[in-house]
Image (cartoon, rainbow, N blue to C red):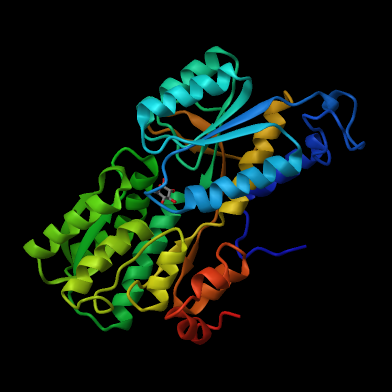
Length: 373
Ligand code: BGC
């Protein structure tokens, strides 16, 4: 069995156990061929699963990883599915959901663009008896049936600790820190910030670090991030460390730093471990990223969706608190992993990016130095 580099949390382990117990070998399919082991009741034909992804520009992950892994999982389970991308359009997001339900979706999986429109979709779906899984982003006040994601406060904590380590390695004293936060309408961005501020604030308070500009980037838009960081660096040219909430925001900061020949001198963080983020790490322009094994996230969510589509009520070991309603949402939360130059190779070994796409041209030598086979 292939051993991933991430451990499952107790909740995720409980999920796979629970589903093994009730879902058999996953052989029930929409084409009515049942691979045998399942009992008569679970041979019921599962319905169709609709997935709405948020956009294609805030991170490469949605199309290159989530879409791919979800599709593979649904195909393997033999269920009917429809995966669409709202391309950052909130009204399209709702129209897609309506159409999916009209076209027979019996389960929805959504990555909301904000909690308001996410909740509108969940309310309508629930009204028609269609359960909804919040995938990666929790819809505040939404009351989804399940939430599948990573421990997002931990993601932020790894970013904060990564930045501290990079600054210490470079022996930077009394650094001024800039923060480029994710979208203000994404609950994950709030949790990431909670994580990294938990690491940075004590250092601001003690005077070891100085707090610099701190801004959210609407819609996680890398173009807006570039403009924002340009302004940050103009108003505070002595920025010595950048906490960027994902690789795309980090790359926007790096592009601005390059113009001042400050790239590689000012450590920048990230998240998602996509090709560009990892290349920025190999080049020494980005000090760390956070790898989230999206395959595990997609597998956990699709197992839940398939069980729901068969009319089962799978139980998961964990919960997450909806800070708006105070209610606990049944949740599967996976562990993120901090990645620096030294373990970029583990992301390749895990199959998340390929050596071919990562180690092109100028990156070939750097890949060799980083031990990427
Ligand atoms: C996800 C990140 C992603 C960001 C922008 C967040 O909700 O958790 O992985 O980088 O959205 O798409």
